Amino acid sequence: MSQGDLNASSSANGPRARRAPTQGKATILALGKAFPAQVLPQECLVEGFIRDTKCDDTYIKEKLERLCKNTTVKTRYTVMSKEILDNYPELAIDGTPTIRQKLEIANPAVVEMATRASKDCIKQWGRSPQDITHIVYVSSSEIRLPGGDLYLANELGLNSDVNRVMLYFLG
Image (cartoon, rainbow, N blue to C red):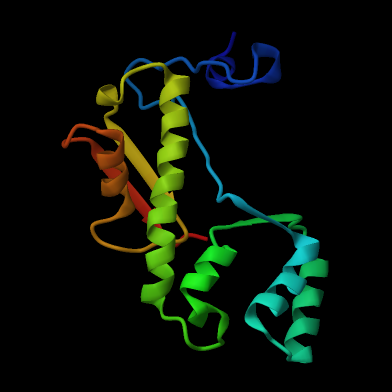
């Protein structure tokens, strides 16, 4: 069996095969992912946007319809919900929401998703969070210092000397 086979996960090995560490080299032993709870099918995007923002501009509606029709994206995930729009009504008014308001919504949501994904990783890995030596934290939805990587490390109860790398606003 090649090294690639040892570190790969395939349906032949079950839903998630355990990866084997490579002696003396950094090895990713588990990956986790999480998505926001709100699922928005692409075909509902324009109608929902027009309704939630009370936009009556036909140019914007037509442009959004063209964009949605020509994309290969079929499903979108968002933290935005009716409850959030009720709490932040200015988000639905063009030109009024500030980056601060958007980050107040995004920052806790991103850390919550990172925590879910990380707990899944730790479960796949089969070891204690105290054995974690490195975190690579990627977010296209938040930017702050201290960063979400620190909040995640605290949520997971990791050692204070865990090595953390943050990659922000890459999407």
